[in-house]
Length: 169
Image 1 (tube, one colour):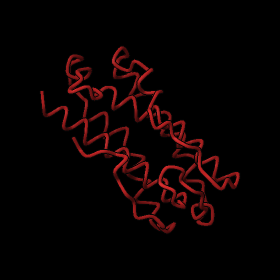
Image 2: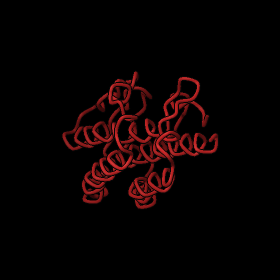
Image 3: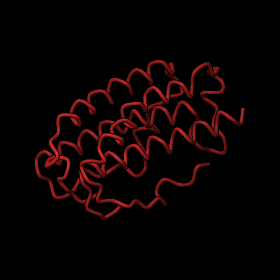
Protein backbone atom coordinates (compact mmCIF):
# COMPACT_ATOMS: atom_id res chain seq x y z
CA UNK A 1 0.00 0.00 0.00
CA UNK A 2 1.75 3.16 -1.33
CA UNK A 3 5.07 2.30 0.36
CA UNK A 4 6.17 3.14 3.88
CA UNK A 5 6.34 6.83 4.72
CA UNK A 6 9.40 6.41 6.92
CA UNK A 7 11.32 4.83 4.03
CA UNK A 8 10.92 7.96 1.88
CA UNK A 9 13.89 10.23 1.16
CA UNK A 10 13.53 13.83 0.08
CA UNK A 11 15.56 16.14 -2.12
CA UNK A 12 15.44 19.38 -0.17
CA UNK A 13 16.77 22.89 -0.59
CA UNK A 14 13.77 24.26 -2.47
CA UNK A 15 13.85 27.96 -3.27
CA UNK A 16 11.10 30.42 -2.28
CA UNK A 17 9.89 30.60 -5.91
CA UNK A 18 8.79 26.95 -5.56
CA UNK A 19 6.34 27.88 -2.81
CA UNK A 20 3.32 28.84 -4.95
CA UNK A 21 2.90 25.38 -6.53
CA UNK A 22 3.51 23.61 -3.22
CA UNK A 23 1.11 25.92 -1.39
CA UNK A 24 -1.55 25.08 -4.00
CA UNK A 25 -1.12 21.39 -3.18
CA UNK A 26 -1.45 22.13 0.54
CA UNK A 27 -4.47 24.39 0.07
CA UNK A 28 -6.36 21.86 -2.07
CA UNK A 29 -5.66 18.83 0.14
CA UNK A 30 -8.92 19.16 2.15
CA UNK A 31 -10.96 19.30 -1.07
CA UNK A 32 -9.07 16.36 -2.58
CA UNK A 33 -9.62 14.37 0.61
CA UNK A 34 -13.34 15.19 0.64
CA UNK A 35 -13.68 14.16 -3.01
CA UNK A 36 -11.86 10.88 -2.34
CA UNK A 37 -14.21 9.84 0.49
CA UNK A 38 -17.41 11.29 -0.96
CA UNK A 39 -20.30 8.88 -1.09
CA UNK A 40 -18.57 6.06 0.75
CA UNK A 41 -20.68 4.19 3.30
CA UNK A 42 -19.57 4.19 6.94
CA UNK A 43 -18.72 0.48 6.72
CA UNK A 44 -16.21 1.14 3.94
CA UNK A 45 -14.81 4.27 5.60
CA UNK A 46 -14.13 2.46 8.87
CA UNK A 47 -13.00 -0.98 7.61
CA UNK A 48 -9.44 -1.90 8.56
CA UNK A 49 -7.42 -4.26 6.41
CA UNK A 50 -4.45 -6.27 7.61
CA UNK A 51 -4.25 -4.27 10.84
CA UNK A 52 -3.70 -1.00 8.94
CA UNK A 53 -5.65 2.21 9.33
CA UNK A 54 -9.05 2.53 7.74
CA UNK A 55 -9.90 5.24 5.22
CA UNK A 56 -11.33 7.34 8.02
CA UNK A 57 -8.27 6.85 10.24
CA UNK A 58 -6.00 7.94 7.38
CA UNK A 59 -8.16 11.06 6.99
CA UNK A 60 -8.07 11.68 10.75
CA UNK A 61 -4.29 11.28 10.74
CA UNK A 62 -3.98 14.15 8.28
CA UNK A 63 -5.92 16.32 10.69
CA UNK A 64 -3.94 15.04 13.69
CA UNK A 65 -0.66 16.23 12.19
CA UNK A 66 -1.80 19.79 11.51
CA UNK A 67 -0.79 20.79 15.05
CA UNK A 68 2.74 19.46 14.42
CA UNK A 69 3.08 21.44 11.18
CA UNK A 70 1.84 24.52 13.02
CA UNK A 71 4.41 24.04 15.81
CA UNK A 72 7.12 23.64 13.20
CA UNK A 73 6.15 26.93 11.55
CA UNK A 74 6.44 28.52 14.99
CA UNK A 75 9.90 26.90 15.33
CA UNK A 76 11.03 28.71 12.18
CA UNK A 77 9.53 32.00 13.37
CA UNK A 78 11.43 31.86 16.66
CA UNK A 79 14.69 30.79 15.02
CA UNK A 80 14.85 27.26 16.47
CA UNK A 81 17.77 25.14 15.30
CA UNK A 82 15.70 21.93 15.30
CA UNK A 83 12.04 21.41 14.45
CA UNK A 84 9.58 19.83 16.87
CA UNK A 85 9.83 16.05 16.63
CA UNK A 86 6.93 13.97 15.41
CA UNK A 87 5.48 11.21 17.54
CA UNK A 88 6.80 8.32 15.46
CA UNK A 89 4.31 5.96 17.10
CA UNK A 90 1.36 8.12 15.93
CA UNK A 91 -0.28 7.83 19.34
CA UNK A 92 -2.58 10.77 18.64
CA UNK A 93 -4.13 8.96 15.69
CA UNK A 94 -4.27 5.58 17.43
CA UNK A 95 -6.00 7.12 20.47
CA UNK A 96 -8.37 9.45 18.59
CA UNK A 97 -10.91 6.75 17.69
CA UNK A 98 -11.55 8.42 14.34
CA UNK A 99 -13.76 5.53 13.24
CA UNK A 100 -16.31 6.55 15.89
CA UNK A 101 -16.65 10.10 14.50
CA UNK A 102 -18.63 11.20 11.46
CA UNK A 103 -16.35 11.67 8.44
CA UNK A 104 -17.84 15.15 7.98
CA UNK A 105 -16.45 16.17 11.37
CA UNK A 106 -12.95 14.98 10.41
CA UNK A 107 -13.13 16.75 7.05
CA UNK A 108 -14.30 20.01 8.65
CA UNK A 109 -11.58 19.88 11.30
CA UNK A 110 -8.89 19.22 8.69
CA UNK A 111 -10.18 22.00 6.44
CA UNK A 112 -10.21 24.50 9.31
CA UNK A 113 -6.75 23.57 10.62
CA UNK A 114 -5.22 23.64 7.14
CA UNK A 115 -6.77 27.03 6.39
CA UNK A 116 -5.14 28.45 9.53
CA UNK A 117 -1.75 27.09 8.47
CA UNK A 118 -2.18 28.46 4.95
CA UNK A 119 -2.88 31.90 6.42
CA UNK A 120 0.50 31.75 8.16
CA UNK A 121 2.32 30.50 5.07
CA UNK A 122 1.00 33.04 2.57
CA UNK A 123 2.14 35.94 4.77
CA UNK A 124 5.78 34.81 4.79
CA UNK A 125 8.39 36.80 2.89
CA UNK A 126 10.97 35.12 0.63
CA UNK A 127 13.55 35.54 3.43
CA UNK A 128 11.23 33.86 5.93
CA UNK A 129 10.48 31.04 3.48
CA UNK A 130 14.25 30.45 3.25
CA UNK A 131 14.79 29.99 6.99
CA UNK A 132 16.22 26.61 7.89
CA UNK A 133 16.00 24.22 10.81
CA UNK A 134 17.00 20.61 11.25
CA UNK A 135 14.31 18.00 10.68
CA UNK A 136 14.76 15.68 13.67
CA UNK A 137 14.00 12.34 11.99
CA UNK A 138 15.57 13.01 8.61
CA UNK A 139 18.57 14.77 10.18
CA UNK A 140 18.53 17.22 7.28
CA UNK A 141 18.26 20.99 7.27
CA UNK A 142 14.90 22.01 5.90
CA UNK A 143 13.60 25.40 4.74
CA UNK A 144 9.99 26.47 5.26
CA UNK A 145 9.39 25.66 1.58
CA UNK A 146 10.94 22.22 2.14
CA UNK A 147 8.60 21.67 5.08
CA UNK A 148 5.63 22.66 2.92
CA UNK A 149 6.79 20.16 0.28
CA UNK A 150 7.22 17.48 2.96
CA UNK A 151 3.67 18.09 4.22
CA UNK A 152 2.26 18.06 0.66
CA UNK A 153 4.00 14.75 0.02
CA UNK A 154 2.62 13.40 3.30
CA UNK A 155 -0.89 14.49 2.29
CA UNK A 156 -0.52 12.75 -1.07
CA UNK A 157 0.89 9.61 0.58
CA UNK A 158 -2.26 9.24 2.68
CA UNK A 159 -4.57 10.22 -0.17
CA UNK A 160 -2.99 7.43 -2.23
CA UNK A 161 -3.50 4.99 0.66
CA UNK A 162 -7.15 6.05 0.87
CA UNK A 163 -7.65 5.59 -2.89
CA UNK A 164 -6.09 2.15 -2.64
CA UNK A 165 -8.38 1.19 0.26
CA UNK A 166 -11.36 2.57 -1.65
CA UNK A 167 -10.52 0.35 -4.64
CA UNK A 168 -10.50 -2.76 -2.44
CA UNK A 169 -14.22 -2.45 -1.69
